Length: 167
Ligand code: FES
Image (cartoon, rainbow, N blue to C red; front, side):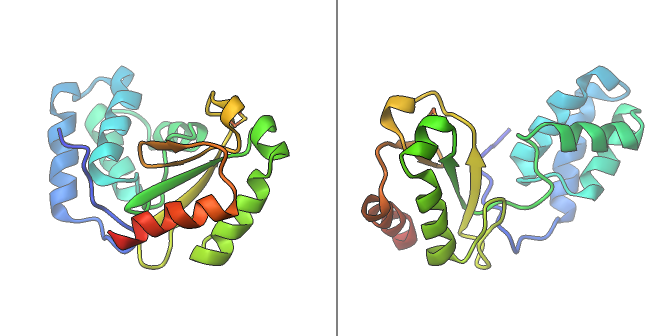
């Protein structure tokens, strides 16, 4: 299974996505206990879990749709909105908060025109707030995809964004 999904905000759910979801479910058909595992794999493949995918998973695993909705909305790792090509996470845990995480969020909102939880109109970046990444000594901490940046201030954030904007 690939998790190098290049889906972005303007990406539409395609028949190929649904075929991928069917393929993921194949070994788990009729096994309600596999719900979280299947949703996780489906999100890796599609990039998010729109209603159509949730319905397909509910049918495939023989799980009530309400249960699928419940699980997707309960776990913060699941999202029903498409994410950006680059996923920015700003830690707003206590240590990062007191060192200015909110200023970074304001700057991201101003520079990228995106609020936390949303994706830029061009689909390049999504911004989310997280609670403690376990690197409090480096706060404020920002991650972009798999990269972790510590002691981030507005100036450093400019440099980080510039790197990804160039791509
Ligand atoms: S509070 Fe941000 S890493 Fe712990």
